[in-house]
Amino acid sequence: MLHKIQSIRNLTDSVYIIRMDKNNFEFRSGQYLSLGLPDDINMREYSIYSGTNDPFLEVLIKEVQEGDVSIILKKTKIGQMLNVEGPYGFFTLKEKDIENKAFLFLATGTGISPFHSFVKSYPKLNYKLIHGVRLSSETYEKEAYSNGHYFSAVSKDKKGDFNGRLTTYLKTLNPKSGTLCYLCGNVDMIHDAYDILQEKGIPVDQIHSEVYF
Image (cartoon, rainbow, N blue to C red; front, side, top):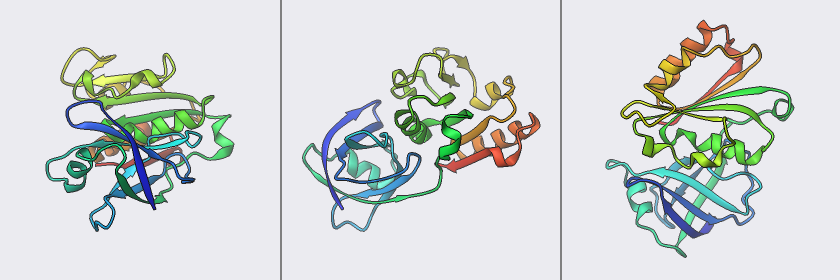
């Protein structure tokens, strides 16, 4: 289905958000879509950044030099049409857990995208979001999260909430029994975080992951 670009906002030199017409595109928060130019076989999968109730559709994209699609999409203009396929994926929250459970969200880089969608879709969610990035300039739209719910672990400068890796900070936490943990981002972070959480007594069935890059 074709969707018209409403706006493009640059968060850093390489990270940007494309907002498109929603066109009755129905999805569950945490799912992803496939995006590309019309009539182009090259498409790329991106987690949906916007909330389910937003009147638009957004994706958070990092331009990578070896990524043909991310480079092409960065050059698109307002009013241009994009091909959207989906939604796909099962990295979602169970309805029965949304109001009754505490959540720990662990993200690296643009892996924060599904968590932004969770928070926009479920305003009363009881969560703590830990975002691991290299630089404090990469704490993408952190003002979107309620005060005290967003925590940055910044490894290359000292302007974050914690100076160091996400997994180093995670070792200092003691999640309460019953906390549901969702991990999205770098595969190494996910593997390390899995081990740390299990060492802290979090059972495997309370840990959910989505490898983003």
